[in-house]
Length: 269
Image (cartoon, rainbow, N blue to C red; front, side, top):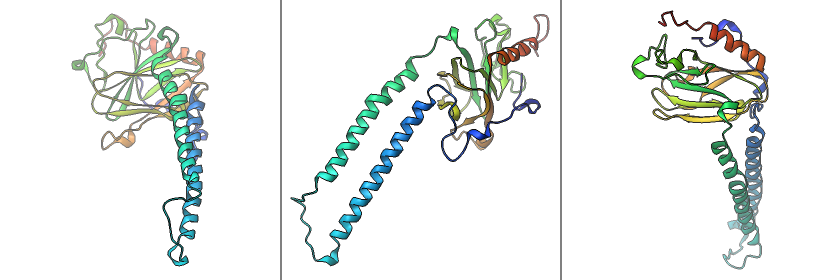
């Protein structure tokens, strides 16, 4: 089982992080970013226009000018009404024209597992356990009573033939570039939140549930897996390495890990 940060072979893509959103690295990152930009632009417009509106009214109807304020018949009532109508139309467009269809796409239009890299990620305080199904494409059975935090943190049952070629790592997720990735998330203890900022992926990880997420990475690099949910007194150190490789390098790594698996006549422990 490979541990986090082995042999110093990771070089984090620090240039992707700055004062704004990190540089996107998935197919739908640009669409998510566009939504955030539109919402922020709307908020800026509202802030400026409403600020000017309030300042004008404060000056025009201040107590020292002797003017009398009448609630009816004000000739510029169209201004606030127009703004409210604009915001309502914008919200309706964002909700029904973009957000709901895009959310439906993310949650319902999963790629075929046979054409994807499928991985299980099991969260616990305070690490990410990663489980690959091996060449047979089938995850081996897991049993809670077999959990051993040092050698078998996910409780993999090696009596199950499907488990014989499974690969597990701690805090290290490797995937190939430009190929769909499906990650099945679950937790051994409390609620965590699986976050890959450059992929624009964030999903709460709930004990007793298996929640799938998917994305397609568009470029290679090394980044961090973050936990975006306060999960205990060492939440700050719940991080892992997320490495996107080209197809050749990923296949070579998988072959290396498969070669390290115990043979049928060897003891697992």
